[in-house]
Length: 289
Ligand SMILES: [Zn+2]
Image (cartoon, rainbow, N blue to C red; front, side, top):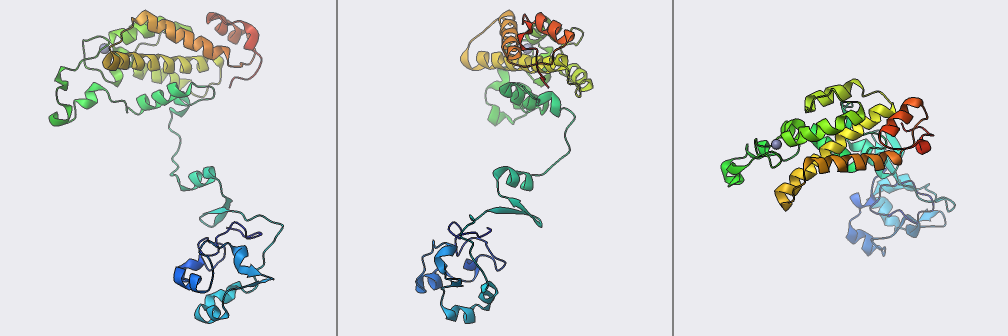
């Protein structure tokens, strides 16, 4: 803490001087016996330019002599800082987070998953897929038999032909590939097969591109993945079934609503792209990143 008027800094427990928290050598009993409250602030123990603690403390704890010339500044608020190595940062949760987290170089797929104007819940699922973190049946089957109980009857609830896995659901499954094949042309991905590897490779080549077309393809892949995973879970846990064409309709509708709310830079290509989605030129005015 940097002391200003001393009204917010705990006299005993905060670190506000080079000596460290005074509680490191003053016990609660010592503090109370001298007539101070344990929740006293710095301003409560400093009057008329000097400390009001017993003079005997200076003999018992000579380290306090270092604080003799301390002054309060009534016109300044107390301020909290975060010490990052030798550097003092203004205290904020983001500064603290950046200071203590482990930083790694960006992974090459970061912009495929997280990008400006993405749909957050879709992006989150994309992240789980890329990290292979969804609890698919192939992963459950690796559990020991006591944990998976009667799961030997498992199969993909979309096609009933295989067990489900990341690669199967996205989008090798007959159901998923039907959905993918029906919507991929809307993002200029007509020749990209229904395989997660192929789709990622295709996107990785374009990862630095800031065109509206790349934005639409990233958005589409995430949206398709989201609705496939949602359908899989609806069948598995709620016994609700929708045909693939209904899912295609939902994907297109979700994409359209999203694209209607995004501002794009005006150019012929973007206009044409949006027209393919049935959207007029009204929102083609600004930078969509
Ligand atoms: Zn399947």
